[in-house]
Amino acid sequence: MIRFLLNVLWLVLGGGLVLAVGYGIAALICFVLVVTIPFGVAALRLASYSLWPFGRTLVAKPGAGAASGVANILWVVLAGWWLALSHVVAGVSLCLTIIGIPFGVANFKLVPAAFWPLGREVADAP
Image (tube, rainbow, N blue to C red; front, side):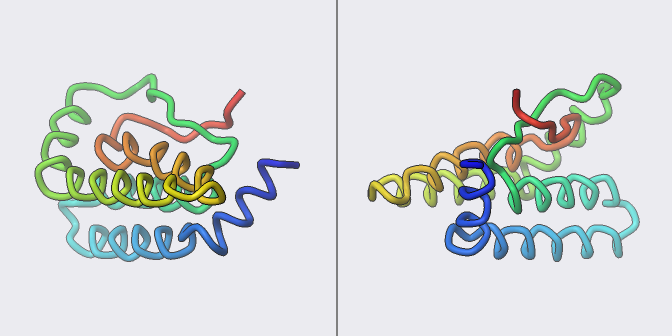
C-alpha cells in the first residue's frame, strides 16, 4: 500500500510524469533514426521505470552480451552521463527537505538506469 501511495505521489508531485514523457520523446526520436532503435527501447524502459519506480528495481538481463556493453559505452558518451548527473542533482535537492527524501531516493535509483541502461531489465523488488 505504501509503495502505491509513493508511486502516485511521485507521478503527480515528484516529476515522474515529466520524466516519462521526456524519455518517451527521446525513444520516438531514436525510433525515427533507425540505427538507434536499441537506444529507443532503452529509453522506453527508462520511461516505464521513471513513471512507477517504487517497488521495482533493475536486474541484469541474462542474455545480454558484448554488444550491449559496447552500446552502453556509446550511450554514456552521448546521453548517459548528463542524464545520470541530472538525477543526482535532483536527488540531492529533493533530499534537502524531509518530505522530498523518498523522491530523492527514487532519483538515486534512476541513476544507474540512466547511466547504463542496455543489458538490464526492470523487475519487481522483493
